[in-house]
Picture (cartoon, one colour):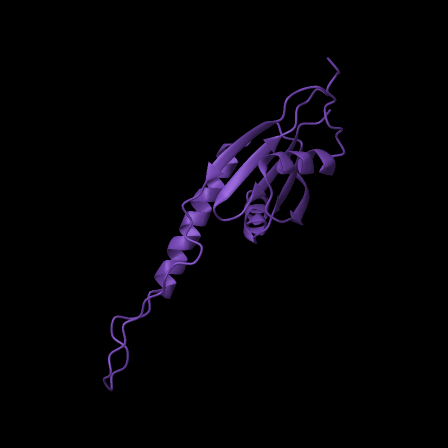
Length: 145
């Protein structure tokens, strides 16, 4: 069996879900929390003079900080990925999944990205089941007692 992994992410959290190599193995999940501010407050000082606004608009500074925080978050995700992954799917509700895909492609990473899929918010068991279903892996069966 191939080493298959799914990454669910938005700008606040990421879950790395590793499927086991053997049929009856246990799925491992790793949770990563980001420090990205999704909607930072934009302040602007306006003075009623003929020279216009004083103090400037902080939007560019805020966007640069957000971009830096996103890159740090994505780097943290990449550090926590196993090195022997053969197939990867990235899924989640936000546009962050495309940013991670772009970073992986820019680094000429040898990961085989099978898909980038938009899905809604899920519980942890739903995320595990989604990855298992995506890679067509059967759910472990419980034997009667």
